[in-house]
Image (cartoon, rainbow, N blue to C red; front, top):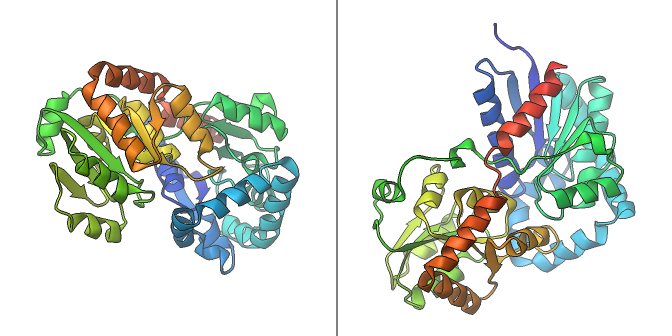
Length: 377
């Protein structure tokens, strides 16, 4: 019998991580339930706020790429209980009427939100439009989630990725019994795979031998991808480089114009990222939580080329303190760290083991089970 119940996921395309997390949860729900409930996605800023807030998605990338200091200033300024409540409350007043209309039209049986600036509005609108249905927050910042994620605390359940996030939830008054440390949801495709690395490399038309360095900037090609890739090549380290520019066509074109000093593959957005991670020995990335979580599951040593101030500082701490990687914010630091990894296979192996210890390959399935359990009550 077809399950006619509906789950609404509220997110926003401010970066690619929120949508990817939702898609990973939906993938897991469909694996658990052969006849799954209906699922739909709603972009909070695009659908529920006026100009210029409704342009938050397209503006986010340029903002954090070119004025990260101002983002960090705003993050730290508002990361206290009083300011988190104030900002969340202002957005609630602006967006709640439109979201209530959307909820009434959709008539979901359960609502999930995975964006910190939408949590307050999503909870209040759900209570107003669909009284009695469960509301669940899924936190997708790893080490140090902004306190706005946890306001108001009257959620039916709050799923957090790390133990450190629990302390911040408690600070905002979320009851202990409504919290679960599960990990960050990533696609099940990043899970265990029986193919040997040499076979994966052959399938991707890569040299089966030697060290492969994967340079990425998330789905949107954000961060310092170009200068870091060029620094590796100009150092003439004995590596193959794979650069994935994501949806950033300008970055891809710029990379393709280069005469590379070492074997280098330039790609745009790919749908087989798990295979590229399985083929690689090291990953160079900004400190986005999704890419970090994927790399940890893949057992990749992580060289962090930068981070969004405030928002991603906790992610850096998680990786570095856990022994899974290093922060290498300059080309010189990156080349030095990479040379250490290339010349010392034992160091690579230790970092890879540390990454696997931090990885949570079953997070999406665990989150899906929690959501389905609340739906079935």
